Length: 457
Ligand SMILES: Cc1cc2nc3c(=O)[nH]c(=O)nc-3n(C[C@H](O)[C@H](O)[C@H](O)COP(=O)(O)OP(=O)(O)OC[C@H]3O[C@@H](n4cnc5c(N)ncnc54)[C@H](O)[C@@H]3O)c2cc1C
Image 1: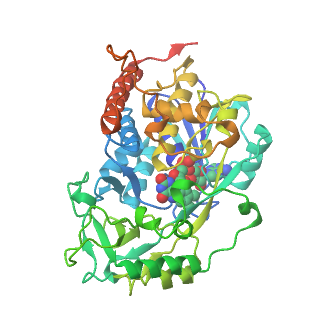
Image 2: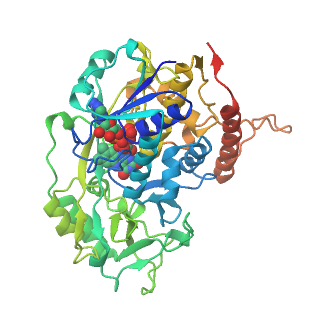
Image 3: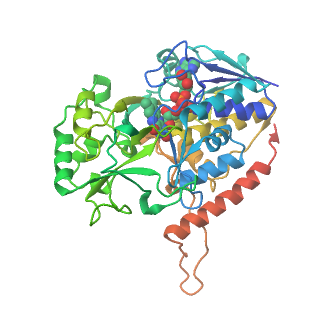
């Protein structure tokens, strides 16, 4: 049996190490923190959440990331086990106490008899005689290893921006103005329907705020950043503001499903804050990722009603992201085609998000373990969220325009529902029914895949 090296103990590497170890393979997990820090990580814990504490929607029947949660749970995910054990109230979303979460992942890996953890930076790609290797070094892959990957792939790694949202101390928010409510009073995993702090703006306040965002001083671009496209799902708030006066009101500041108990009519716009720690003392401004200068952020965000005296635990910022051209470089087993003892997992493969990164880690761990044990595990079927995401990065996406991707139903195989016997045309299921049918189909296909033993090679 070959051993497996996992490089990087983030969301993907932690899950990959756990899955391989559970399959009975010896794993060495290499994590460079705390010896070598990154600009975003703040602790030495494994699976640290570097920004938001949300795993997004937990609704498996209607939302693709919720479905991915459920598939991961059924596949015995350590990340989901720890997230469920440390969840916080957050409406329909799965939010976690970040410290409790990463402490639980770290403890489980440290206690695992098949896992050895080494705190060291890996600066070169291990040769085949060292065993199999999973590279899960994330968007902030260290420079030396990044250069080694570049040399091995012959491809330019790409870089783009994500931006961090500010975090506010709850006791600095004015609750004569703010109120608690989840959008449409939707119940979350914790059972609550009033999980968010809401701040109302009238029309004039909204217009002034948008103007201030546009006029505010931004961080300078570095040369290498200038040609980098933004990731559409994580646009800085001031970039959204620049796109049109109504963009924010139809985006992160939308007022639908929210009623100010003190107001006579629905607010013109609303800023929402989501709980960020178990104590409930810190709240993050939902969708307010920004590249405004820090001084400008405090000044402009304090013009929001209820935040006049806000104290910020952390201000927003920019970060870079490194990912490889997976559709061109990787096979369906997540192996580098040119050096198949090397697998990639997590954000570095061009998926986007904590959950997606951990999910690809889970697959890499299982696929590598089967290989280490002398067999070959078929990749998950395309009807599953696992398979849809994997299929996208390993061939579904156009290599020429490849950009990081969150899981979504657009990546799934369409439903085959036969032809209409009257018209002879293909029948279609639309909207929510279509998503639900896809979700049910996914879980059925997943059960078959999980029951399958690896094929001997
Ligand atoms: C600043 C920032 C904010 C983000 N915010 C969010 C968010 O709010 N929500 C969301 O869903 N996603 C967010 N992302 C995107 C992404 O989901 C996370 O980065 C996620 O942590 C990716 O998981 P990963 O396992 O691929 O990488 P990571 O979790 O970053 O893990 C990689 C690990 O590899 C280690 N490492 C790097 N190089 C080496 C080396 N040479 N040798 C040994 N170890 C090494 C790092 O120290 C790190 O622990 C954000 C990303 C960044 C950078």
